[in-house]
Image (cartoon, rainbow, N blue to C red):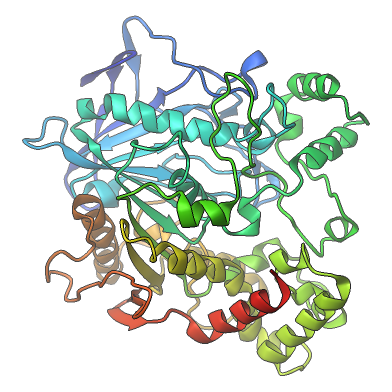
Amino acid sequence: MHVQVRDGLLEGEVLDNVLGGQYYSFKGIPYAAPPVGDLRFKAPQPVIPWDGVRSAKAHGPICHQFDMFTGKLCTEPSSEDCLYLNVYSPDLQPKKPLPVMFWIHGGGFLSGSGNTSYYGPDFLVNQNVVLVTFNYRLAVVGFLCLHTKEVPGNAGMKDQVAALKWVKDNIRHFGGDPDNVTIFGESAGAASVTYHLVSPMSKGLFKRAIAQSGVNLSHWAQAFEPRLRAEAIARSFGKDTKDDEELYELFKSLPIEKITNPFAPLTLEEEAGIRNNGSLAIVDEKEFDGVERFFFGDVYERLKNGIHDGVELMEGYTTDEGVIQFAFSPKDNFFDKYNNYVQCLVPQDLAMKCSVKDQLAIGQKVKEHYFSDKPITTDNIEALIKYFSMHFSYNVIRYAKIFAHKDTNKLFFYQFDMYSERNIWTEQFGGRFDIKGKSVCHCDDLPYLFSTEKVKAPLTSEATQLIQNMTKLWTNFAKFGDPTPDSSLGVKWPAFDPKKEQYLIIGNDLVVASHPNEEEYQFWEKLHQQYLQ
């Protein structure tokens, strides 16, 4: 089974869908030239066309990476030559072109891929959409910034744009509609989505967007002192210099294996593990002749005044985002730093801009609000999860409130609260701390959208129904710009407006509510208004 694309002829395959039926699969399609050698930090370059038939039955290599959950180098086939995408379609020649869903994986800009190990297409293509997944450059090769023409930053985001352009040019050959593309992503992928909403490079390449558990307002989505960070990484390799050319030559020459997990603290707090200002992320690019900028300016200003007109957005968070915090924390003496130093309870964006005196005041207020000034232990770990969760959901809600004031755009807001044996991340992360009850962790929404090798339990009738509900909402939005265009799901999801702030709780039942997480949001908002200009 062959498909002709711009760069050559592809041979795909027909695969069985775990929900029944079949779909067409094309994997490992190059969407840009290998970003190696002198192209290591450059914007992606065009694919060199090939002769004959190229097999598209296996994934291309993923970006060489460090697995942030296992603490080891990733075992999947990996390479610096990693700019490949995958297309899955229910029908190559439909009567009417099908909506396209373009998935941007998360992983903290350090790890992840578009492969079926996590992101199998079965559930979504079963709803009659074309799904595209892909890899982009990560860590140093994707997000290093020297603020120079040679290394301006945001290479990984420019990869994402190149993949979107490939979709625009080629997706019709797979039965997809190039004029009806929905970009969607989770965590760092969701932050990426919200950057695309304001990037001049992305304008016109998509129609709708879904941001799951992440926005560009989050501190971890904005690079902290990127040039100083690059110099610190260089020092970790024995090169103490501020010279542009010396830094560039060093980073161009280092083997990819050495720069997959660049730990280079800039502050004593980072060194001690008290703070994590994010290693590498999206930067405010400086202007250079002949270099197109993915993002520049202030994220708040661009959200208020730079969102692409007419784009429809679906956005939300999981109920217990903060359970993921336990994935990166040693169990021994875990609570000590929170009990001994209230500064550790200060939200990151406040800690980065407030005096020590103000940090102590903020930390004390947080401790009183969440823990009634009692010691933090396993006895009140639910309160700690609630606190950790707001590190994600505060900015997600804040983003919605600002976005909803723009009359030319429509927003649907949600809280994800489904629970079944598919909540594998709750089990994996929460289990380390013996967390009881039905938590809905960061990433727990993903196994309801994608088939994944990580879920070992068989598909029960209950889980299948939850998957049907979830994928119906997502694909309805992609098809119609409305997740509930009819009564088939038994609920009407209203658009989010600044006054009523109605949203959908996506649980084992679907329930409309208003003013998401109002009490916690107002507490955090008051702290920000009091201590930040």
